[in-house]
Length: 439
Image 1 (spheres, rainbow, N blue to C red):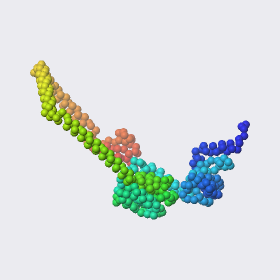
Image 2: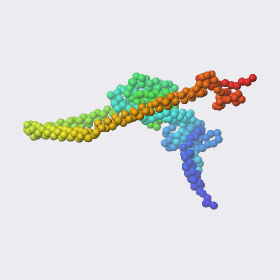
Image 3: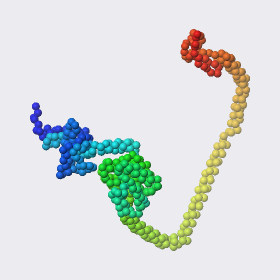
Image 4: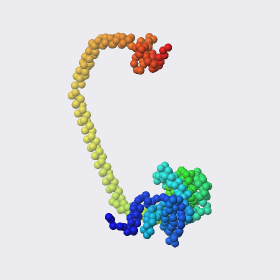
């Protein structure tokens, strides 16, 4: 018998077994919150229960800071958690990573379904993403006129790149009318070609507050837009379907403004550097060409042009003599080839071979004359045999008004062979189906 286990050893063993089960390390649980307490450290402690069972749960401050709405007793929630054992008490409890109200959970499920559908359609394909213009002349903004997003985007644009004009389309960014207004604004921006790049965004919020950017009509308008779109919805941790379909996703509205524009000060600095490099290269080019001209001016050829011209003339004379020599050699070679060919033709007995061929043709002509009567007789005999065959042909018989009967692929020679099945009567120009009907 094994030695008895210490309590801590048994609890530790159960803890390890639970944590080794991957299914229990990320499980979704739905239930009602009770005995809720918020510790001064920011950790949340509560019990999750239903009609039949209850289990303790804890949510550490880091995860609790991401909650979109406060938790209270009696609230029905959906949570993602891992299951483990608290060593000090030996109790199983849930360590919660994410938690939303049960209704929000339904929204999240709808979000996941739509995301999967559009991903299957290829709407998130990086190959479809349009490139943002390097130096936009007009930047479009679609957001609420009352939100901080408009102020953040406009301030950043004016600071970084005041050369760009701002085209603003005010819309609601949450509520029932938000999605139709956002959709209409995107379509109008495209119809009028009102801008070179378009920023769509708003500040952070709960999943319900951001839901307009998960609506299918908004997502479709973004996908069909000919203008490159930057999605800046929510904060860095917020994601909507619009973020995935847009050409670029920005973590914040300010980041979106930085993505669509260069920084004017940096451009000015860059232009200054290029100008200095151009000046240096130009000075070097002029200096090197001036030195080259000086060397040429001091060269022997320019000092004595007659000598230089004489050298060029000598080279020309040598080339002319070489050309004449090569031409004469080529002509001699071709003449020798023609002479050799003529000698070869002279040795061939052309006349004798032609006479021999003529005699052979005459011999074959006489032979053909001898067999012509024989061929004529064979042709007449063949014609007679064809006529005899034609006279006894079944087709000839049918032409005289006769017919024959087939049933089941066989010729019927007696009325006794005809069954109740249909049979075929064959004429010279076709056939018909018939059926036996006795009285």
